[in-house]
Image (cartoon, rainbow, N blue to C red):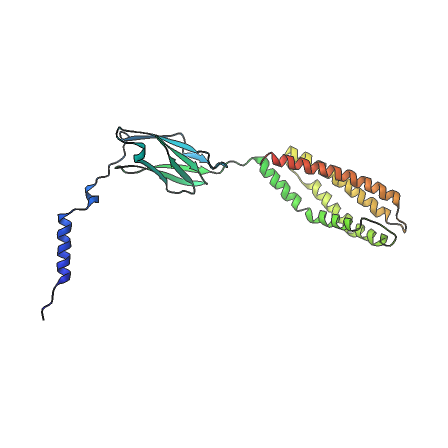
Length: 260
């Protein structure tokens, strides 16, 4: 039985076809992109991320020889998370998207692409912003003491002969010990920021008046009969303290809003 060597024949056919018809890519020559073809100019290679997504980080300006149009020039980024580009007429806008390093790859039709490197960093942090964060963190550590004291004092805000003893023990064992720790914590906070230091001083004065009022409440509840005169004095202290604390809160909010 006669067999055919089909594979050998097919290989020979392909070889002849390749020799007879060279590939298009082999015929097309890509030339180097030299200065006599196009020149590129950029003010800086160091960019900073902007909060405004439409703000241009820098612009690459180019000038090409006659016959090369803007539509022949194309740009892209090898790391779009760092920089992106937008082609224009005679220019390429570069946008800083995030910190890192990236290349803008520029291709001119018929020529080898070129790469322009960029380094992107985050914008510098205002020292005051970090100082506010540090101050807020210090206050946050004191919240459990303040909450325990205030929640308990609010629970025992109306005094009668029936709840006098229970109220006295609540103030003696829970309200005053916790609020004392809270005031001590405020006094221990240190900051180099003069405005925060001033505001914290206001907070300390207000909280100290509150503590004085709490101690007067405890004193008023000590005897078998509630001392209404001391209760009034305590309320006056508490009211004055709340006023200063409100001024502190308003002042701190206004100061923080400056950095938004």
